[in-house]
Length: 417
Image: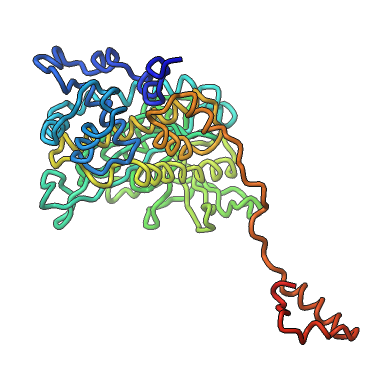
């Protein structure tokens, strides 16, 4: 078979979002009008390849288009300048890449819907949190955050299952915007779901609104919260439940007193620290609610994975649109990696998929599959811990029985007996 007829790994990745789909999702008429070389889709392909290959700058992307024959073949031109890439990154509407991200998240959710039964009749555990990318105030003055620091905050909702963390909705804003200001954007009415978020989203009026809308939630309570205890159930320390109460939150003086009762549960997090949780889920046991809250670490792991393995800590451009486009590209790359994992049926770590993609991006897809499922070649059990106590007992036994001649020889070493 001719090499030109063999599908490459990058072609298989990009097949998940083809050119026509991108143009349809852009909602921009004549997006590539008068553009002969660096079309929106060619630029999209370059940025996905840059994310998968951990390319550190647009200058490096430009250099690769000149040097790599496989890359030239994939994008369809010989070279592109850094300035052209920079202009394209700043000019393309970030809404287009946000739409692509949403399109891919829906595709992931459809593929993984069979995994989504979580607890009893709860089919979705939606976890909401945010992560801030800190930036230089002098270079990114539009990214308002603090007096001496700039930053962009990614507000994100993910669907958590026992096996997967699936992105669902995202919002990018300058970091000065608080978490709780974005609750309306990230919460939909879904009777089969529970929303899980941290105390940064503490807002009694929002809690009241969620209760009246029959939206179930679990969140952590701040230490200075005003609490009126209505009733109390017997705690169960063996199940790590140290308090289980029905309460009202807020106070009448400040006008924050809630009308709807909530349930207060005191338990421990995964690190053994005391945690006070409030929820409007009265149909679940205290242990079930405590177990649900412990799944909040999955979104923190997601943010950590992205910052470590995708390009969102340093940026290719300085404008707001350039920064937002790069972050959307990182989220899209994550979704493409998850879809490749599902398509291949690979049960290992997502990072293994990412690293194998990076190494074999322009090799045949068959080579990629073989490498992904290659059995380990190591048969050794690894370095074993030396049992010094056992060796000492042997030497003492030899000494007590008079077997001491070998102890005086020059080549004797108790470490290698």
